[in-house]
Image (cartoon, rainbow, N blue to C red; front, top):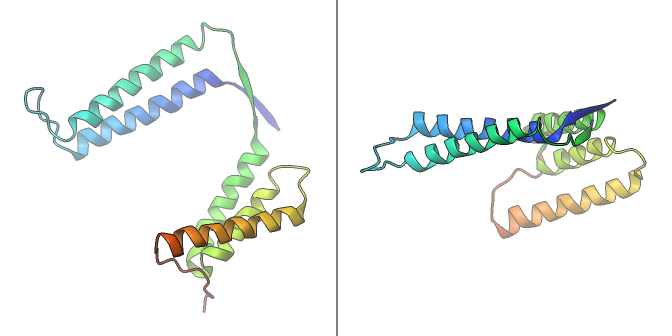
Length: 149
Protein backbone atom coordinates (compact mmCIF):
# COMPACT_ATOMS: atom_id res chain seq x y z
CA UNK A 1 0.00 0.00 0.00
CA UNK A 2 1.37 3.40 -0.99
CA UNK A 3 0.56 6.71 0.65
CA UNK A 4 0.87 10.08 -1.11
CA UNK A 5 2.06 12.96 1.09
CA UNK A 6 3.35 16.50 0.65
CA UNK A 7 7.12 16.22 1.04
CA UNK A 8 7.72 19.90 1.85
CA UNK A 9 5.15 19.78 4.65
CA UNK A 10 6.73 16.62 6.04
CA UNK A 11 10.18 18.21 5.86
CA UNK A 12 8.87 21.22 7.78
CA UNK A 13 7.35 19.04 10.48
CA UNK A 14 10.48 16.90 10.87
CA UNK A 15 12.80 19.93 11.00
CA UNK A 16 10.45 21.64 13.44
CA UNK A 17 10.43 18.62 15.73
CA UNK A 18 14.23 18.45 15.62
CA UNK A 19 14.58 22.18 16.31
CA UNK A 20 12.09 22.06 19.18
CA UNK A 21 13.86 19.04 20.70
CA UNK A 22 17.27 20.74 20.54
CA UNK A 23 15.94 23.99 21.99
CA UNK A 24 14.04 22.30 24.84
CA UNK A 25 16.93 19.97 25.65
CA UNK A 26 19.41 22.86 25.73
CA UNK A 27 17.09 24.93 27.90
CA UNK A 28 16.51 22.14 30.42
CA UNK A 29 20.03 20.67 30.49
CA UNK A 30 22.47 23.57 30.31
CA UNK A 31 22.74 27.00 31.89
CA UNK A 32 21.66 29.60 29.34
CA UNK A 33 23.14 32.75 30.86
CA UNK A 34 22.34 36.07 29.21
CA UNK A 35 23.50 37.91 26.10
CA UNK A 36 26.33 39.65 27.96
CA UNK A 37 27.51 36.43 29.61
CA UNK A 38 26.42 33.45 27.53
CA UNK A 39 26.29 30.01 29.07
CA UNK A 40 26.97 26.70 27.32
CA UNK A 41 23.28 26.26 26.51
CA UNK A 42 22.83 29.55 24.65
CA UNK A 43 24.17 28.41 21.27
CA UNK A 44 22.16 25.14 21.07
CA UNK A 45 19.06 27.00 22.26
CA UNK A 46 19.41 29.67 19.57
CA UNK A 47 20.24 27.01 16.98
CA UNK A 48 17.12 25.02 17.88
CA UNK A 49 14.88 28.11 17.82
CA UNK A 50 16.32 29.18 14.45
CA UNK A 51 15.74 25.70 13.02
CA UNK A 52 12.19 25.76 14.38
CA UNK A 53 11.48 29.14 12.71
CA UNK A 54 12.89 27.93 9.39
CA UNK A 55 10.78 24.77 9.68
CA UNK A 56 7.61 26.81 10.28
CA UNK A 57 8.39 28.86 7.17
CA UNK A 58 8.97 25.70 5.10
CA UNK A 59 5.74 24.18 6.39
CA UNK A 60 3.65 27.26 5.61
CA UNK A 61 5.21 27.79 2.18
CA UNK A 62 4.56 24.15 1.28
CA UNK A 63 0.86 24.96 0.90
CA UNK A 64 1.51 27.91 -1.43
CA UNK A 65 3.80 26.17 -3.90
CA UNK A 66 3.07 23.48 -6.42
CA UNK A 67 2.56 20.25 -4.55
CA UNK A 68 5.29 17.63 -4.93
CA UNK A 69 4.06 14.38 -3.55
CA UNK A 70 6.12 11.33 -2.68
CA UNK A 71 5.11 7.72 -2.49
CA UNK A 72 5.66 6.01 0.84
CA UNK A 73 5.82 2.24 0.75
CA UNK A 74 4.35 1.21 4.09
CA UNK A 75 5.33 -2.45 3.65
CA UNK A 76 8.99 -1.61 3.12
CA UNK A 77 9.05 0.82 6.03
CA UNK A 78 7.36 -1.68 8.31
CA UNK A 79 9.80 -4.44 7.39
CA UNK A 80 12.82 -2.21 8.00
CA UNK A 81 11.44 -1.17 11.41
CA UNK A 82 10.74 -4.83 12.20
CA UNK A 83 14.32 -5.73 11.22
CA UNK A 84 15.69 -3.01 13.51
CA UNK A 85 13.51 -4.20 16.39
CA UNK A 86 14.65 -7.80 15.92
CA UNK A 87 18.28 -6.61 15.76
CA UNK A 88 17.84 -4.73 19.03
CA UNK A 89 16.27 -7.78 20.67
CA UNK A 90 18.88 -10.28 19.44
CA UNK A 91 22.15 -8.35 19.65
CA UNK A 92 22.64 -8.98 23.38
CA UNK A 93 21.83 -12.70 23.54
CA UNK A 94 23.34 -13.74 20.17
CA UNK A 95 26.01 -11.15 19.41
CA UNK A 96 26.54 -8.55 16.72
CA UNK A 97 27.39 -10.79 13.76
CA UNK A 98 24.25 -13.02 13.75
CA UNK A 99 22.04 -10.05 14.58
CA UNK A 100 23.48 -8.01 11.73
CA UNK A 101 22.96 -10.88 9.31
CA UNK A 102 19.32 -11.28 10.44
CA UNK A 103 18.78 -7.52 10.13
CA UNK A 104 19.97 -7.46 6.54
CA UNK A 105 18.12 -10.59 5.46
CA UNK A 106 14.82 -9.33 6.89
CA UNK A 107 15.40 -5.97 5.20
CA UNK A 108 15.84 -7.90 1.95
CA UNK A 109 12.11 -8.62 1.87
CA UNK A 110 11.34 -4.87 1.87
CA UNK A 111 12.36 -4.53 -1.78
CA UNK A 112 10.72 -6.91 -4.26
CA UNK A 113 12.73 -8.50 -7.04
CA UNK A 114 15.95 -9.12 -5.09
CA UNK A 115 18.01 -12.28 -5.29
CA UNK A 116 18.35 -14.05 -1.92
CA UNK A 117 21.85 -15.36 -2.71
CA UNK A 118 23.07 -11.86 -3.54
CA UNK A 119 21.50 -10.60 -0.33
CA UNK A 120 23.26 -13.22 1.79
CA UNK A 121 26.61 -12.45 0.14
CA UNK A 122 26.07 -8.70 0.61
CA UNK A 123 25.03 -9.26 4.23
CA UNK A 124 28.18 -11.26 4.92
CA UNK A 125 30.37 -8.63 3.26
CA UNK A 126 28.79 -5.72 5.15
CA UNK A 127 29.00 -7.63 8.44
CA UNK A 128 32.66 -8.47 7.83
CA UNK A 129 33.41 -4.83 6.98
CA UNK A 130 31.62 -3.72 10.15
CA UNK A 131 33.71 -6.13 12.24
CA UNK A 132 36.94 -4.94 10.61
CA UNK A 133 36.11 -1.28 11.15
CA UNK A 134 34.66 -1.38 14.66
CA UNK A 135 36.60 -4.23 16.26
CA UNK A 136 40.01 -4.18 14.60
CA UNK A 137 40.46 -0.56 13.51
CA UNK A 138 38.55 1.28 16.27
CA UNK A 139 39.31 -1.34 18.97
CA UNK A 140 35.73 -1.47 20.27
CA UNK A 141 34.92 -4.41 22.48
CA UNK A 142 31.83 -5.89 20.87
CA UNK A 143 30.35 -9.28 21.63
CA UNK A 144 30.58 -10.74 18.10
CA UNK A 145 29.10 -14.18 18.82
CA UNK A 146 27.19 -15.48 21.83
CA UNK A 147 24.84 -18.27 22.67
CA UNK A 148 22.10 -17.69 25.23
CA UNK A 149 22.27 -20.32 27.93
